[in-house]
Image (cartoon, rainbow, N blue to C red; front, side):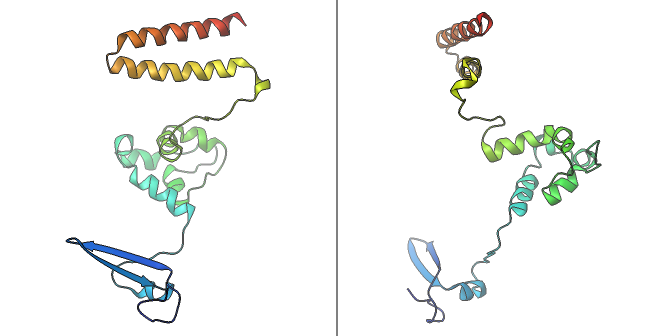
Length: 170
């Protein structure tokens, strides 16, 4: 399909606008899309800008006190949390520990979890699998208690005790 503006180049941007039930479609090439007044296209994607945007949007909850965030500093290299937010890069391995409390919400937001959830090698032993199962059951137990499903909570509690006994007996 050719560009609706210039009629020469192949259209790569397809814009659909629905206003009051009326559908309007516009097909543009890259050059015409850059000049199109209805929208601004930024073709450069940067992981740095992505992470910085996430950090900037997290200025609620524990991030409300901006002065505290700016004062937070790595003990080893001296990198401040604000500098990390600007660059998206740590100065040293100690930065992970120094900014730990601020990184947990970011990691949860990006990965939907703050700890590794992956496969456990079979040779690694059953203890690791049992510990992961206990963690899952504890989360289910917490939800059951919140929902006031006490019979289910008691069953989960008993399963957790059984699994803990298995670990202790090995």
